[in-house]
Length: 250
Image (cartoon, rainbow, N blue to C red):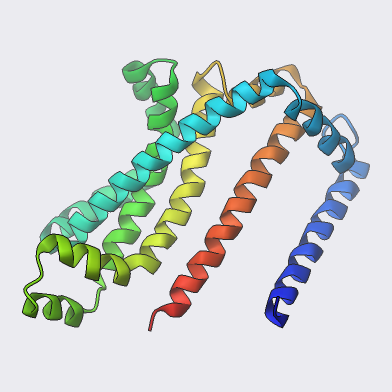
């Protein structure tokens, strides 16, 4: 590992220690009625992870999130490339996308429940509608800002549309597209968990909502810690890849 790698690792370690110390200090102030200590939370989470029933809820959330993210990515890329390549369509539908993005998605949940019921498809749909718009917007912007010389060169070489997309559009637009994917990941995860909290009988979101209703502080803290660890780990990897992609672009 080079000097920069060691510096990043040290900064990450300092950040983690600082967060744990702040958590412990906050616990000392508010007490066990509002939260649990870091050590107690990690212990309780370890006990949960040793329970088969808890893994059933983890599997349910993972399945819903995977399908929701896949739908958000495929739909967002398709919409973004279409609107970015066709200027008129982009000018017409971009305000629609932005308006839809600004709407609190929880207001759409009754419609989703009526359409899908209290089942896995409802959670998938609710997660997907959170992540599809940022992916579409970033993809559309990336295609619009593409260097026109690349497209002219592709036309001179008489490349087919499919070849242009694979060989020209995707590599050139990848950094901005990946930024949209990173945001879409976070928002899809939030949407999936919200879907489980307000209309599900299984999953981590359901467990979290049940724990809130029962005022089960240890369970609330353990589930929150698990979600934060997963989201932070994946987001860190995505941010590193995102920065490298942007640095490689001229």
